[in-house]
View 1 (spheres, helix red, strand yellow):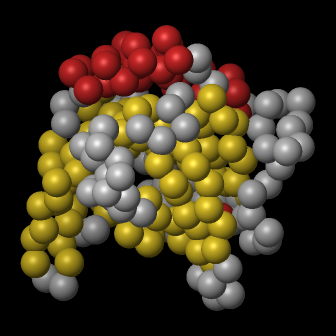
View 2 (view 1 turned 90 degrees about the vertical axis):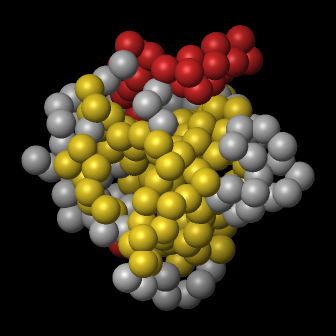
Length: 200
């Protein structure tokens, strides 16, 4: 498995985008510390979405944080950002050091177990930086993560480990969908942080 000097794998996608996997950027003790902190210090709420005109409440919980009270709309629901916590600022700094990117907001997801996942979608909302990077940190149970090309339907999968970092950039959101498949074998929680850049 070829690694570059930056400790990330070469592009996981065969075309039309760039996805780099940095594997574990936190050791076991650090990763355990952060998931405990995130589970207790984040203002988690059940996610909401409007699908076919009906309001759906998900089992999965979410939280939206940033450097100021950004508004972020997806699935026809608008959220207003809370101000960074100490832990989130610490994690943001680490991610920015690893990626060389800068981020001003973070959408967090809490999956209580493998019965909760996320269907095929792209993070291409209008107020996100065009072709900007999205850095995805994972804590807790390892989960499979999948990509599917919008036209060719090619698929790429990767296993996201406890304390790992995945970065999606360039035209990835324009040409690829991604999802977190359900897996009933997964019994514990997973916390996912997706650092983004909002254009105010």
